[in-house]
Length: 118
Image 1 (cartoon, rainbow, N blue to C red):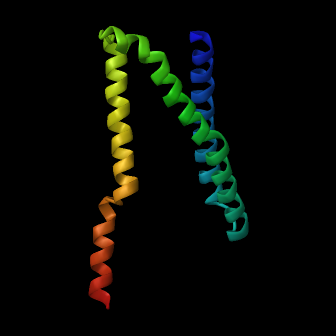
Image 2 (image 1 turned 60 degrees about the horizontal axis):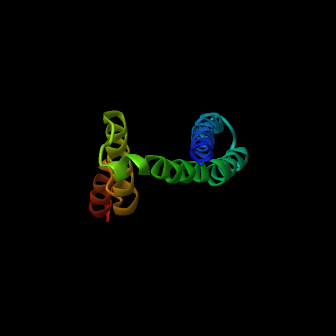
């Protein structure tokens, strides 16, 4: 069963990284296009995120948790696995905090400028 979860993990991060790279290339390319073509490019980016990146990220997280269960049950987590878990949780936590609280650096400046111009 470990082999199956390893396959899911590898396929998941392949989809995740491949979709991310495709998104970056499409985004950079779309900047040079006209408005209608740019909109089509952004729709393509949304589809890539929905079809490749999101399922790949979910597969990586779930299979990673399942693959790390034997270490957690033993109570002895190798250093590399602990470091990876800490780094992933900090990165994911910061990402969720930005997404759900909307705390971005430039946001407060924009709010103040709206208040002064009215």
